[in-house]
Length: 150
Length: 150
DNA sequence: CTGTATCCTTAGGGATACTG
DNA sequence: CAGTATCCCTAAGGATACAG
Image 1 (cartoon, chains in turn purple, green, brown, blue):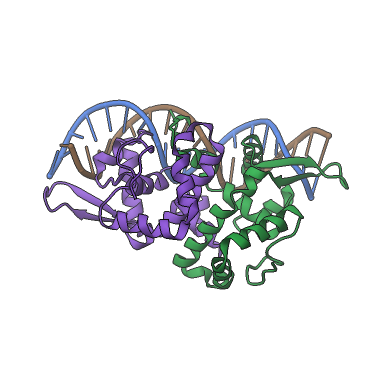
Image 2 (image 1 turned 180 degrees about the vertical axis):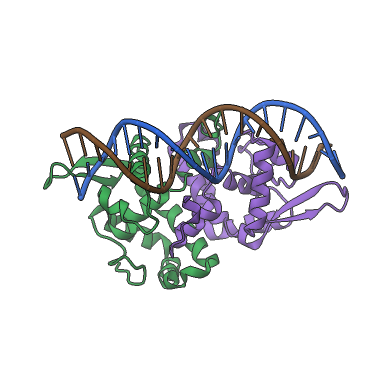
């Protein structure tokens, strides 16, 4: 029996069943930070996820109610992935992960300014981020985390 | 090549490398929520981790600087696991996971009172939790999450 | 180009035996 | 009891082919 089959009445355990794998939060990050919405955009992420893995993750996240998949209006072949409300509610968790990571990872000095800004007034920032994502804007303008626009 | 080998300058990616597996945060939870400190106590968690898996997780978390392992003063055979500062700093992330999980998991209604209380004044609660953990106290008095004491 | 299917490989959990 | 070692098995990622 695999761990995922184990139920418990713990909310943390539930959360880990939902997004406690190595990729899900990175997909959320790609959407929130970089405004990504398509398969190809996710595929081009820094961490080089394989197509098969990405495909499964997207299906899984949709099944779990974290992503919505809709056919693009412009290009019918293209599917567009957006965060559901359940997915948008992961923003605070994502920010805490980022803050913790930035604190202890020697390689992420560049993003510390942004992290610090978020810490100043977290609830307000979460609102602004949430709004930005819902309206299709990205937190970061480029592939770099150095320049953010909120 | 496995995903863990992939470096990126993303703080979230770093955080996921550290604690993005299915067990690490549950061990942190066991320490923070229930005041657990020994192998046997972790082993008895609701989710029934196997001895071998627990052993590897503990070694790994110590290696990553999240846990400290010290020989118990009373019983020399017994190792005691405590959170480092780096580990204690995971408390905010853990609380966000719990809040998110409680919101969307139908089975965790029992813990919502506690979650609500934390949301009232999160920074203060984090401090109190941190202090409690450092002094060896548990947030929850029993195996149930219903009764908390802070 | 978007996404899935296939095949291969591996990390890591489960059960259990075992050492101290 | 604390913890590790061994063996097995499965979930899931990587590479790639390929279908729409």
